[in-house]
Length: 515
Image 1 (cartoon, rainbow, N blue to C red):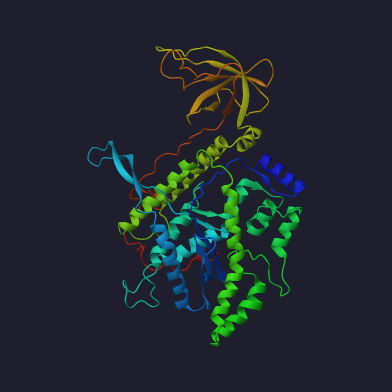
Image 2: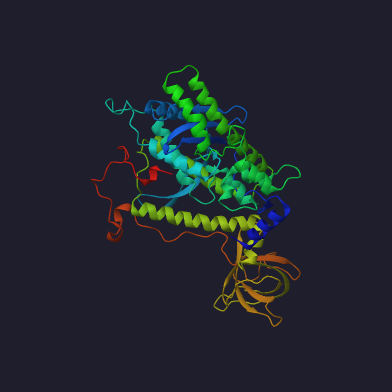
């Protein structure tokens, strides 16, 4: 936790309402997101109890399972969910634009430009909390290997045709959610907590109602009081007024309301199924309304300048998975091989470094946290001395003297980067502190001035300019290339065996089946 966030949390307690952690919105918000609020059966995370899903905040689709122990009813729930979600996901698949990319020519081995399709937009699924993201992954894992009656006529409990396809898409969304900065699948609590600091812990921020109570409390009420009421207030029957839809249910609801209603359903009493649907909706509707309320708060923030670049990577991800599905490729494997796992880890580390840099460059409040940590500085240029590199072709290497109140963690020869208006960065290196003390320092520009002997106009700051320098790269690159899976070294298990379990067979139960 940065010092800025600590201070913001202290101010939130004093002021009685959440304090901003950002001046812009750092995640993409679709014009038409699909909100998915799931609910599970107590004691069995893989057994869905119900859900509210849709793109219309006034008319969500209610799905309910009157008896979660009935496998046919559970499959009917998943089939209805697939019939709702898949048209939304497929709705972005055919509107494309052409992008030029460089690919390796198999004959010459050289990089050649080719035109490929990129979907103009992509779907976005929003769930109430981080537990909802894990539940989407769990549903995807449980569905993508299911066998249908068309595939195996004799299979017990065949799945409806669209269920395995929904499982593949949910798995893709769940995997993409693990990439820092990705926005195909987002938890509303994570979105709000990124942009506001409350006076409670990160764990308490996972309750969407309590989080919103801090961000937008009732007039004249302290955020802590409003949050406590959202978490604990109950009606005369002992039921929560603001069920979190976690996606777990409240024990008091299970014991006093749901269990008797299911007993009446099992007994075949008329009206029992409608009663269960009404009960499920009563637990889901507060979370549904809270998600849309959070969307309204986030849309009031201007979008960060580099958010569109990250969303474009999401569009590439969506387009690539669309192509794999249409090509008839098998579903994602149960476990990644060593090379694939290493590639995922490397790409996520790179994405995290890029996200940290881009958020700081987009947002002065985030940059302030980096300055307090000694990872950036803002200073006024007090002098510029022209100098040149030594060699056959001397290049300009101006010495820029700065005065700053920041305390950057600099060492001799350390790299610095200055953000430029065109989105690029100008490299420099630290030379020394001046005799005026640690507030004065000298840096040497090492690039970004053109290729001539004279720097291009505007490429060198002038005395009186107030400039920002960072100690971190603005466009971090990934690590070294990894070998192909068939070249996996023996230290990492060697190449995947040819007789391994086919990926399309039913998936055995593992510890990941439980949240």
